[in-house]
Length: 452
Ligand SMILES: Cc1ncc(COP(=O)(O)O)c(C=O)c1O
Image 1: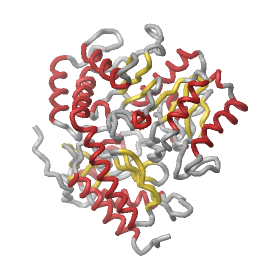
Image 2: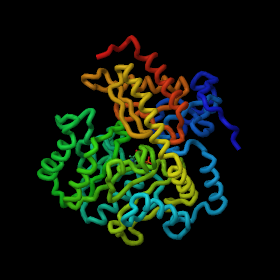
Image 3: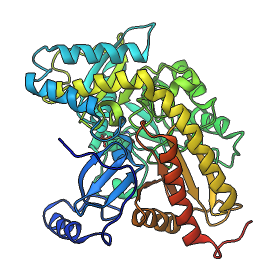
Image 4: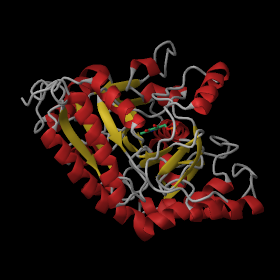
């Protein structure tokens, strides 16, 4: 049993400490240099909202392992569910055999996506695999091969999903040629609107671009299998589109017999204050991709499609590990906790956290925009508020400074600080995190910036 960890950042050594330095040095000798570690955190253990490093330093975790530790670290209910399952059945491969955990989770997920119409579930190990599965099913079902995705999108890194990803060129360079037939169009970003539009017209502009440019000059909509879209762009910068974007995009897709595929890998599982983000806008997709927060940190993903769409034949798609029973048990417990209290907590604490961050924006002109829903909040750091030019360097310095003060954060987009704590977060913890952010802003910006 772990000893309980007190809930405050508590820094005992310089950062990184001696044990972290040694671990990192060895890690760098043996692990892939493609990993993107932004600061030197070497984790020994974690509980709730607190992560302890190998030198005994304690940090407040507002990353949730990239929006994944829904119930916090090592929640006793999740640990118990995992232990119980591990003693019973570790693996049997749901591809070839039946077991209750896969049936139960599939039924639960299908019901969550729609209470009215039947959906079916394909379980995976990760988000990128859920997207791969969606891509394959969309092609299989429609017999079409073109796919529409968005600038700034992140859908994963396996070659099919990577073909849809258009977040950073580093993620794509030297891996081509990628999947043919993927067309990227601008996302409806109201803060930096594309296509010379403004916040009020960016949805019109994007949809017109699709209809009048893409469908008239590039591909016939009859060849398009799917439009794959994040409800809120995650890695792309926590970009929340105007509320009519998704309903109108889905309507446009359906007019042409195109499947509407929602990548809820980051936005799903209660993070935005509803089980799935698209529920905020009354949109039910044809296919939904899930992963990250679905099993509180155990590897699991899901591709959930309307029953009439999931018409592929035995052997068309499968996975050895997908739907692992231990991961399924963790997911069932996670969903129970979301239903009981954590979605409501995401609404409540998300609103409170947002008010605290909005208050920071009043005081620090380098904050150009605060946006998000529930516990998915982005702070966009700009060179000045008029041009809205991103300040990536300052964003990176702020995140590094917060680390030195005991607060774990990540970036996203070009210049955004992403705030995505576990859904168990409470008021005092929000206050502590924002107080640390406040200190970092004060240390790095006061005197060097003026109000526009
Ligand atoms: C929206 C979205 N889709 C897909 C993925 C890929 O998930 P994974 O890293 O589990 O493959 C991510 C990961 O960040 C994501 O944010």
